[in-house]
Amino acid sequence: MADIFLSPPAPGGAVVVVPTYNETANIEAIVRQVLGLPGDLAVLVVDDGSPDGTGDLVDALRQQHPDRVGLLRRAGKLGLGTAYLDGFRVALDLGFSRLCEMDADFSHNPNDLPRLIAACAPEAEGGRGADVAIGSRYVDGLRVLNWPLGRLVLSYGAGVYTRLITRLPIRDVTAGFKCFRREVLEAIPFDRVKSNGYSFQIEMNYRAWRRGFTLVEVPIIFTERSEGESKMSSGIVREAMGKVWELRARALVGRL
View 1 (tube, rainbow, N blue to C red):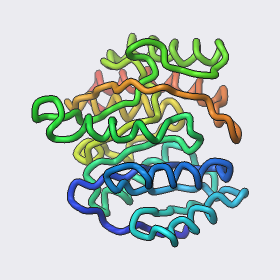
View 2 (cartoon, one colour):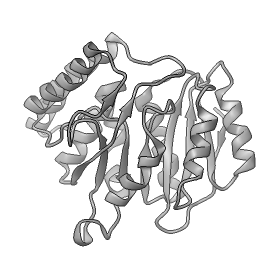
View 3 (tube, rainbow, N blue to C red):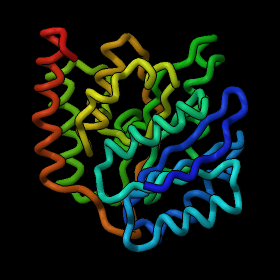
C-alpha cells in the first residue's frame, strides 16, 4: 500500500473522503468540482487498486494541488466500509474537524457539500450544529432521479425496515453522502465496524445515534450515475437486512 497524504488543515478544516474503484470516467471532474467550492475543501481519495488507472489520475491531481488532494492507495478491492474507515483514520490523524463522505460517480452533487458542512458548524441551529448531517433523498418529498421503480422500492423499503427494527430517527438510513464532526468518529470503535455497502451506512448512523449524537437530514437530489458501473449487488442487500438485527441485538445486551 502506497500512502500519499495531503497537508494538515487550517483550524476548522473539512475534508471529503471519496472511495474509488474503476472511476476514471468521473474522478478528475469530481475532484476539480470539489476544489472549486468555497471554503478550501480538501479531498482524500481512497482507491482500491483500480485496474483502469484511477489512482494514477488522482496522483496527477495531487501533484497539481499537493495541499488539498490526498491519495490513499490500497492493495485491492477491500470494500466500501473499510475504504471509508481507512480514509477517516488518515483525516482524523491530520486534524480535520469535519469529515465528509461521498460517491465518486456524481450521484451526489458536490455543490451540496457546503450545506452538509454548514449543518455541522458550531453556529448552526442557534449555536449548536448537528453532529452528523445526512444528504437525504427522502425528506421534503422523493428526491431521486433516473432510478428504476424496483431500485427505488428497495431503497425506500430498506429505510422502513431499518427504522422499525432499530428505531433510527432518520428516513434515509442508507445514504452515503454525509458530514461528521470529528468527535463522532473518534467515539466510534472502528475495529468493531464490520459492514460494507448499505449496511456500513446503517451501522455508522446507528452507532452515532446510540452514543447520543445528533443526526439531521439535509434534502438533496440524488441522480443515478451516467458513467461507469454501479457497485450494487444482491449480497449487499442481504448483508444490510441481517446487519440491522445484529446491531439491535448488540445494543440490547450492551455489546454494541
